[in-house]
Image (cartoon, rainbow over all chains, first blue to last red; front, top):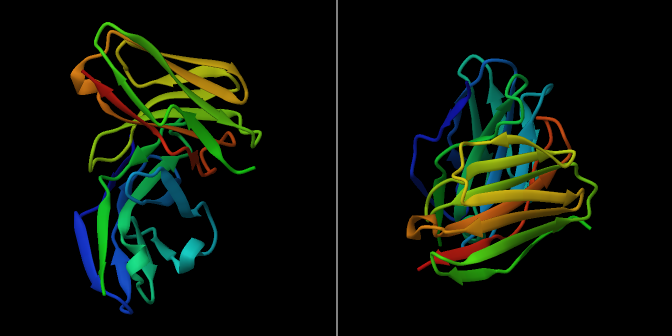
Length: 114
Length: 113
């Protein structure tokens, strides 16, 4: 079985400050972790993924995420938040034993305040 | 072409109607997905096709009937829907394998009266 948790419904951050959106996961095999962003009334866009290798993953629009195996976490980060980053962010997990299943977190709404 | 297209963008239907949602991609992806998304909720996986064969059906009611006529097209046939089926229906595609990211279409906003 696989599951993913996003403990915060909403994160507020001032423009220019660093942001973190949290994600923890549970899988049976090796985890494959993804972050997607959804802007209002639009489909989802892929930001980045962790498959194996370097624990720090860099993605689109200046986002990065750190994989921590011992804490089973994959937090999304950005050093300087922009108002245009305001959106809904989903953490997604798949695992090598998941047989194509895809599990989404509940989503975290990021609000960047000018 | 890195785009997934979905038609129509909006659909309003009665509970006795039959309608279809369409999804198309030309990225050569052999895995395609249907999701249902309610407002302010995460997408819920409905169906997965791999090499044009249905590989996952997440216990979706039979009033939803998927079809994958070829490697570029994915349809979702709708019949006798309920008002609670009103939602945003998202199509996605990817290369096969769990390590590959999905490309999502913009969705079809479905309202069942």
